[in-house]
Amino acid sequence: METATSSSDTPATSAAPPVQAAEKWGFPLQELYRLAFTFYKQNSGKAIHLSYEDNLKLIAFKQQASLGPFKTNDAPALGVLDVIGRDRQQHWQLLGDTSREQAMEGFIDLLDTMCSAFRPYIEAVRQDRDETLRKDLRRMELEKEVAQKQEREQQELLEEGYKEELQRRQLQDALNKQTYQQFKLYAEKQFPGNPEQQAVLIHQLQREHYHQYMQQLHLQNQNQTQAQTQTQNQTQVQEKAQQEKEDMPPANNNNSSIELANAMEGLKLNDFEQQTVAQQEQGQGHDEQVQTQVGGEYGQETGHHGSDEYDDYVMIRPAKIWTRPDIEQFKTEVSAGDGDGVITIGHGDTVTVRVPTNMNGKCIFWEFATDNYDIGFGIYFEWAKPVTNEVTVHVSDSDEEEDCVDEDYLSTTEDLESGTLSQDHTGLNNPTAASKAPISIIVPIYRRECYNEVYVGSHSYPGEGVYLLKFDNSYSIWRSKTLYYRVYYER
Image (cartoon, rainbow, N blue to C red; front, side, top):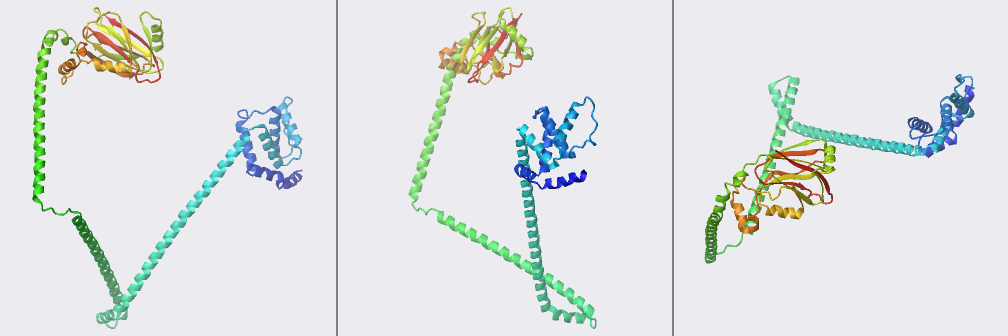
C-alpha cells in the first residue's frame, strides 16, 4: 500500500492543478499551503467563523495532506461518545486516494471560498515578499557596485604605484649610467683588488646620489611654485591698484566751489544747533509751567484727601488662592441657589462682579468653577465708598473692556516712577477721568483651568471700597462659558 501511494504521488506532483495554483497565487504549492494553514490556525474563531461541516472538511484536507489517505488499521481507536472524532475520520475517509498535493489545493480553495479575508492576506504576503526581494536585489547591486568601485580604486592605486616605481627605476638607471665610471674609479682607489667591496661602495654611492638628486628636484619644484604664487599676487595687486585708479573721480581745481560747499554745510549745522537749543529751552519752560500748574491746582486736593483716603490703600496684602477637588458638589450647591449664582459668559465678553466691602467684615472669600473650559480671572479693588451693599454683575464685550481699562486709571501709588503726576495729567486732559476712583490690581487676570477643580481665594480688606471680580472670556471667539461662583465675607 505504501508503494502504491508513493507511485500515485509522483504523477500528482507534475500534474496541472498545482502548477495552476502556484501561478494563480504567485507561490509554490507547499509554501501556499503553509501560509493557508497558518492563517487558519491564527484566525479560527476570530476573523474566521466556519460551520461545523466546513471545519470537518478543512481538517480532513489537512490530515490527507499531512498523513496521506485514511487507513483503518492505523487509525486510533475512538471512544463511544467521541462524536467529533468519528465525524473527522468519516470526512477524511471520504477523500479516498486523493494525493497530498490535491488535498493541499483543496484546503486552499475551500478556505478561499469560506473566508473573504484570506485572498487579501495572501496578496499582502506576496507583496511583502516581492518588496523584500527587490530590496535584497537592490542591496546586492549596491554592494556589488561598492566592491567594484573599491576594486577599481585599488587597481588605480596599484597602477599609479607601478608607474611611479617604473619612473623611479628609469631615472635611477639613467643616473647610475652617468655616474658609474666616476664612482668605479673612486671605489678602485678605496678598495684596490677587491671587486666585491668595490661593487658595494658603488651601489651605496649611486643610491645616495639618487636621493640627493630627488631632494634637489623637490626643492626646485617648490621654489617654482612659490615664484608663481608671488607673481600671481603681484599681478592681482597691480590690477586692483589700476582699478582703484580708474574708479577715482577726476580732480577738481575749482577751490572756490569746495569752499562754498563747506560754508553752506556749516550754516546748516549752525541753524540746526540753534533750533535744537531753542526747542530744549522751550520744553524746559513748558515742564516748569506744567509742574507749577499741577502743584497749584492739585496741591490743595492732596492736602485735603491725602491723609483721609490715599493713606488707606497704599499697602495692600497679597491675596491667597488655592484649589479643591469637589467640583461636582460645588456646582450642585451653587445651582441650588441660596444666594449663589450661575452665569453664562458669551464669547468675547467679560463679566465684572462688584462686591462692596461690609462694615462688619474683615475678609472676602470667593469660589468659582466652569464647565469643560477655562476662563480668565482677576481681582481689582476700587477705592471708593460703596453706594450700595448689594453684589452687582456687569457684562461687557471686549471693546467695552478695553475702553474701561483706558478710562479707569489704575492706582499708581505703588509705582514710585509714576507718582501722582500721571494722574494729574490724566485729569487735565480728561476731566471725566479725574472724577473716577483709583483702582488697584490685587490679582492680575490669567486664564484658570477651573473646569477640573474649584478655585478658592481670600483677601483681607485694605480699606473701604468695592472688589471687582473679573471673569474674562474675551479671548474666546466662538465658545461661551458657564460660570458657577460664590462670594461671601468673614467677620
